[in-house]
Length: 288
Image (cartoon, rainbow, N blue to C red; front, side):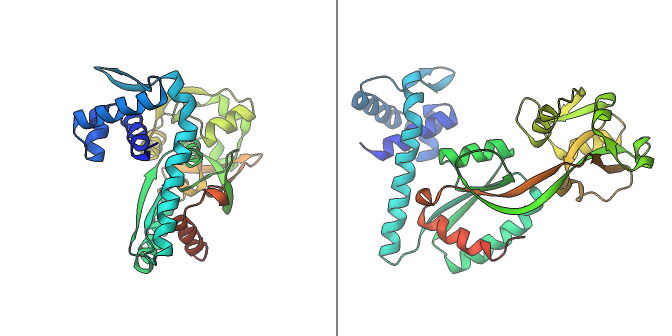
């Protein structure tokens, strides 16, 4: 089977339409449509439900997707291995990070790495820790800097980070110097990334804490200024909290304290491409 067709299928699912996938991959609308029709003829059933609203995978396609991603990933590793044998170290490494704090370190490493391996390209994505780890397991990205989750990947620890509470400076718990867990239920709460699995949502669920979520946002900067304006409190990783030095918002420790493991999630050894192996080996010497 032609892996180019598999790549086109995955791109169509990611983009939500054949036309968007064709534009991204350099095919005409009719060309990518013929490609999908040909692939469906090969497998013997429909892979996409197509409509004016776009294209979504069929149930049969959903069952095939994990294997298809493995095939596309294996082809990528094979091409990189061939280039390495020919003495042309090339390939692509895609990186994800949940923490903007590590962009400075990450881009510095990428700059040095690309000088040593100019034929290897790099891309950076963002997302929640759970989203990025899922992308690693699906082969959509090569590795990510995240909070630790359960899953099938290798783990390179970076640090143990405190989970803190952002409160306005006039909050009564500022004088106390910490906030008890149950006190979180008594304050108006600003929910970060609602309906997504995050360090905050996992922590609240594990401790059976029912917060009064009056506000929500998907932006840490917005959450900070919402707290600053007195709208409520929110949970935040210390790695984010240390980016702000203003006195209008105070980052209080929890009682009892909660530690978050931050590190690098990478595929299991047998699934690493040559380019990724080189990058991980290179980056380990510069871990923050």
